[in-house]
Length: 115
Image 1 (cartoon, rainbow, N blue to C red):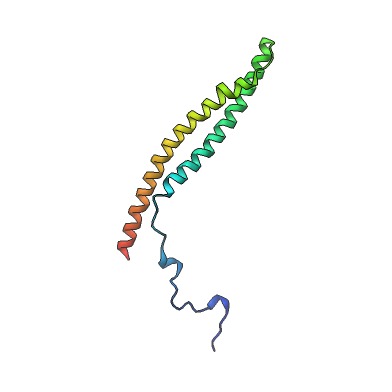
Image 2: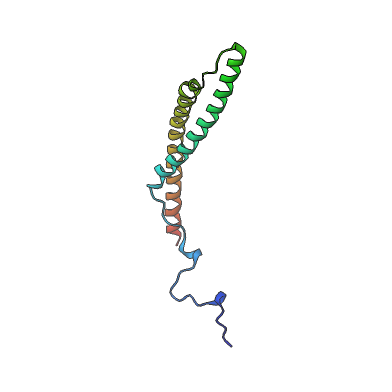
């Protein structure tokens, strides 16, 4: 007695997911991932630096009894801080992603020879 349920459907000519293996890594992914992470870290660092610099500016204005100069907080503190963090993160992420790419490429070559 033969049953043709969806779970037991014949797969003539199709490779199983375990035998297909992962695709070879592509070098295009290295800068894409590096720039994406850099962009996110730059935005996060700008937001945190802006929050802290605004709080610092408000505290300073209360202590000195002057009007708070909020444009100073983002022009001279948060923006330069975010640009510096972004440059550092970009360099670090390019190095990390290049190393990961080389490792994935070597592992894919080893896996290819094992088949």
